[in-house]
Each structure stands twice: as structure tokens, then as C-alpha cells.
Length: 354
Figure 1 (cartoon, rainbow, N blue to C red):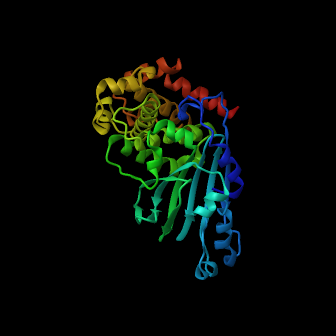
Figure 2: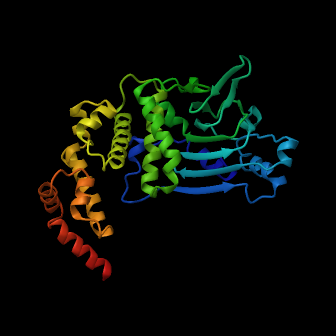
């Protein structure tokens, strides 16, 4: 959280509307967040640690030792600022940071933060009287209440993600939200394992996503976080929708990475994801079922290769993508594109030349 974000952090205390977080991105191509990148790499070595400490000083005390000030320091942060939340992706060398009573008394920030360890180990003290410590190994998720003190030690290089959510948003989903402070999420249920996979994909792919897709991915993750920490036996409508969205994305990526495998079928996907056949069909019902979706993906890939690999025989492309015969491929291709594969190739080459 940067100094200039402190004012926004105060404003996001207001509760979000009744729409699920992951659905609020559904405006006509509109993205409602700003992205900022900060790095100390351009600073002189002697100023790098201090630059990071000053950057986060609006909310956290980050004392730097003389050794840290004399050596190079890695510190970079991508901030995604929404009207109703903030998402951070940070990478730093070892450091200590604290949210002190003095700091709390000087601001009105009372958000909840869901702190995700992607790389590194963190130890956080949230109750000085009882010496309550929360240790995060990779990957762990720690819930923190910005209205309560904490001290965090990162003894190793760390890559962390942080979701700053308004207090009202969390309290609306979790009955005893005040008790979240210092809790670490364990990946012991299908929902939390699904959340883990989505978090890893988010940290790897977010920078390359179009804005609307990036917002959707972040908000889906928030819904899963709230559902997981709420320990709900039955998912709410928004959490169920978010979970289905993540699972569908995983299946789509699985299909794309196995298009050239002849054994890619709905049955192989059922085995890979341990789903029931009706559930899988409903997930791809709008495409006519998973079998139709797989065939359409293969046809799209074939169409691209017909034009880009002009010296490759048509049937070599078809066989490589799992079609068993020339007639089957030609019939399916004509149904999808309204012409034979050879005609499509000729038309595509003509368009490229012109």
C-alpha cells in the first residue's frame, strides 16, 4: 500500500453493492482500475532500502538496518487500484514491517488484508500479550485486520500478493470477521485447492491480460478468498459462480495444451478433473457440450495452420489435431467455416498478399 493510496484506502471502507465482486467487472468493455508500477532499482544502492521504506510508510513502519542501507535492496510493487479494493503484487528482499498502535491512531484505515505468500517465508505476530504467531510457508494466505497491530518478519526474499478489502465487504460475508486477524488458510478442501491454483495463475499471467480479463480474474479470486475464510459448508451463489469460472478456465487451458493429443476427449477431461458428466456438460452447455468445444478449438487451430503453414499438407494438419479421416475433417471444417479446407487456405493466402 503506497502513501498516495492511503486516501483511497480510507474511502473503500464503504460497503460494495449487492452484486458479487466478480460480476462488477461486467460493464461494456470498461475497466475500472488503475495500474501503477514502482521499483527501487533506479535508485542509488545506498538509497534503495530507504526508498522502499518511504514508499510504504503511509501504513507500515519498515525499519531498515545499516547493513540493508549499505547493500543493494530488491523492492518492486505493482498496484491495481479499484474503487472498492486494492490488489498488490510485491517482491522484496528480507525485511521487517509493522502496523503499530501509533500508526493505527493516526489514520482511519480499517480494511482487511488477505496476504498471500507466493515465494518465501513470513512470520507474523498479531497478539503481543499471548505471543500469537502466524507462520506462512509457500503458499499460505494470512488474514490481517488493519485496525489491529501486527509485526511481520520476512527472513527471506519474498513474493507476496495482497488483497485490501473494505471492512464492510468482509463483514457482510464472514460473521465473526474480527476473529480473522492472524488466521492462516490451509489448503485442505476442494475450494481452497481451487483458490491456490487460481492465485498461482494470477501472479504469473496478470501483467499480460487485457484489462477486463485482469479485473475479472482479481474479483473471482476475492470471491473465493471470502468463501474459503468463511468456512462455508455450502457456497453462496457468488462463490459458486466464481469457483465454476476458475474451474472452467482450468479446463479450457487443459484443452488448449492437449489439442495435439489424440486421446483428448470429454472422458479424459473427466478423469483429469474428477468431475461428474452432468457437471461438465453444464459447464460447456453454451458450446454444445465439451466434445463440441474440443472440436471447435481444433478447427480454429487447423484454420490458423492452413494459412500460416502453407507448405504443410492439409491432412497432416488434420491428423496432427486428432481428426481420424479426411472426410471427417473436411465435413467438420465445411460446417464451421462454410468452405473446404483447401479453399480456406487459398482465400487466406490471397488476403495476406493483398
